Length: 116
Image (cartoon, rainbow, N blue to C red; front, side, top):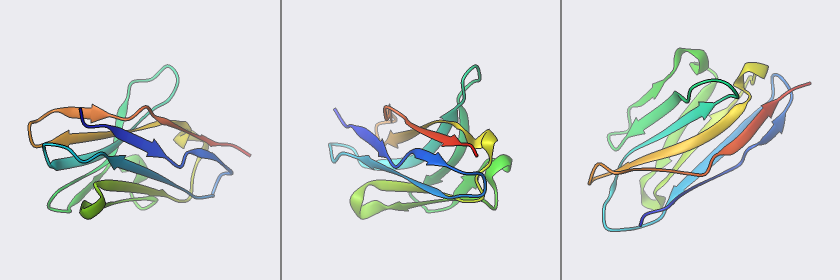
């Protein structure tokens, strides 16, 4: 089975920055789409940003201009560079990877806390 693992969560002050990393293990199927979702307590998981193998990113309105998603196809990795963080960005962030067989594999999640 192909695995997905996130890293890079932590705490930041409002206005600060954090970078999340996600790596998909090599396997039978190539990676098609890589995405970051987040879920705050008591809310549904929401799409933050994603990027296909063509490289065109999508961003939720709430993070446009503050977050940047980019991927390294050679490493099967995707990064979420977060700046101008706000308390409402506090959540568990999940990486979701869709493979060529249409299977979506999720990471275990990494927590981001934005607080003064």
